[in-house]
Image (tube, rainbow, N blue to C red; front, top):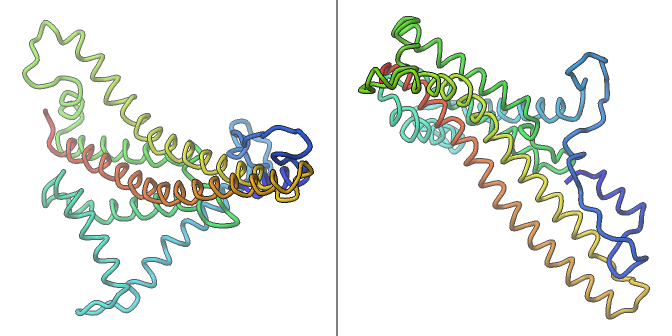
Length: 283
């Protein structure tokens, strides 16, 4: 929850059972922070809070590997065990199930993607930052584009340009007479819809989750009015209402943390499926 929302509510003195002003929920302005440095270039937003949370996320992901692997031993300690648990989880549940043992060469990429995406997501829960990096479409779009390029590179290197394109456009066993209909659909699905949905899935979930938490936090502040001019009974009611909002906020925060991990997992799982498909060729 952005501190700007709290400040605005405090300055207005807008609370339930108060001066009569209504609740003004936070909106999409949360996701468009004021630029600290504006370069004035078309299509850019300059240096904003997103740059800060991205750097912090990168440092968090780097610090994880540094502190868990700097003293690697044959008999792992707690930190090394945690790092190995993450690697084995990605290997056994993602890369080997989608690409077989050959997928082990992509394991470092998939582990890095998972940890980096999760670190970017949890920035929405860090006090003082509270802005998930992936709530800005530009960041998941770059990640999805990277996977899309890699998918094509792997397919072309394995089967040649013609073989890769044919495998993506002409499903096996489809009668020739229906190909004029199927080929455009496959082209749209594989080369446009696939990378777009890969990015939007992550973006939309982080956007909606952060907005929901912001609404609960702002509502909790609006409902808290123990010194209501309408009397102590209404003041006590306001505290009770605010307590329910706080419980909802804490519950959804825990749920959002789970969703952040799930979305990192889903993004990496889809990336692994796509690359495995490119390695396999015709389908």
